[in-house]
Each structure stands twice: as C-alpha cells, then as structure tokens.
Length: 87
Figure 1 (cartoon, rainbow, N blue to C red):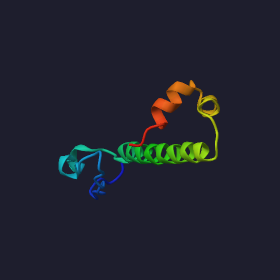
Figure 2 (spheres, rainbow, N blue to C red; figure 1 turned 180 degrees about the vertical axis):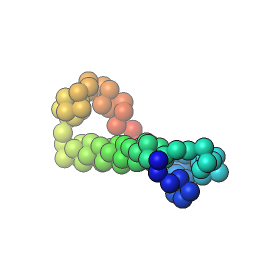
Figure 3 (cartoon, rainbow, N blue to C red; figure 1 turned 30 degrees about the vertical axis):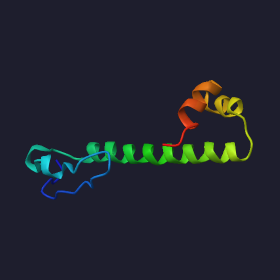
Figure 4 (tube, rainbow, N blue to C red; figure 1 turned 135 degrees about the vertical axis):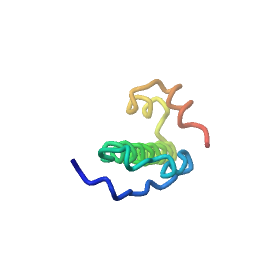
C-alpha cells in the first residue's frame, strides 16, 4: 500500500472550491484516482477552450455554420447555439 502521509494540495479553480480542507489523508488509501479525475477535468476545460477558439477562427475565416456543424457532428443550428454567442 502506498504511503499516504504526504498530502498533495489540489488547487482551487473558479468552478471548484479548495477541497484540501475536506480531505482526510488518513481515510484515503491512494489519491491517484482523484488526481486523475482532477487532471481529466482540467484537460476537458482546456479542450473546450481550444474548440471555442477553433470555431471562432473558422467563422472569422468565412466558414459556414453548416460546415462547422458537420465537423462537430451536429446541426448548424446546434453549432450556432453552442458557439455562436459570446459567453
């Protein structure tokens, strides 16, 4: 069993609170799975930002919502609904 005496802090984000106050290191056998969840969440956020930027660049280059929708596997209406508004 791995040594869990070292607590690795998980940084707070704008969408998630600082969870370090809620983690009892003596109750955790291995935090690697939770770290994998946190890393996947961060990667997903990065990918969503990259996709928004790519869609914006595609529109600026003159590509239609129909073509963007095809590339995203959705209708042009759904592509516009999801990416057409500034957030």
